[in-house]
Image (cartoon, rainbow, N blue to C red):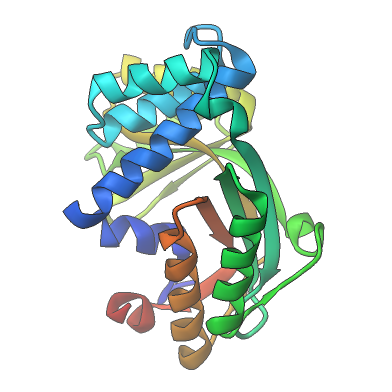
Length: 246
């Protein structure tokens, strides 16, 4: 895989611009609201809410925004109209793509997602057409440590499935149920955790040529720019030069 990049790594390198931070806070708040609605407003007893709040704080979302989102979830009004929808499709070159959305208008969101796929060389598929190529995993990200091997041992001892030491980071993978336990073990050993979330990882990947990669990156970015879209996943692997240029 040397010389290639994953979509998750590309997104981290790009970061979040100030112009997009407002939209990010809206999406984080929506996740908090849904988590609170489905599992209650106590983050100690609601695993999904706890992760959502941790992620919001990591992105410097104001506490009042977090509290307001929780109250929406356990009360009435706007939160009651939100629903979670997953779309599946293909990018240029055949890469599998999964789009997770939260919306108060299913028809609007479906039209926007379908249009974005078609205008950027992809195609929206039927439910289940690519989901079988992904599995749910917890992923914890830390900055690269001088004692990376020791960090890996702590994670594995706490229940991690795998640890990958990258050039500038350490990626720890767990089953979704163990992510909080492993996170706490790392933090208990003074390992600063940058992020922890449950995500979808491809069980097989597809390497794209330069042209297909550039087109697929553009499609993924356009999908993530949609207000109703929370997360986008793909099994595409991108040439490093295309990822850097993108």
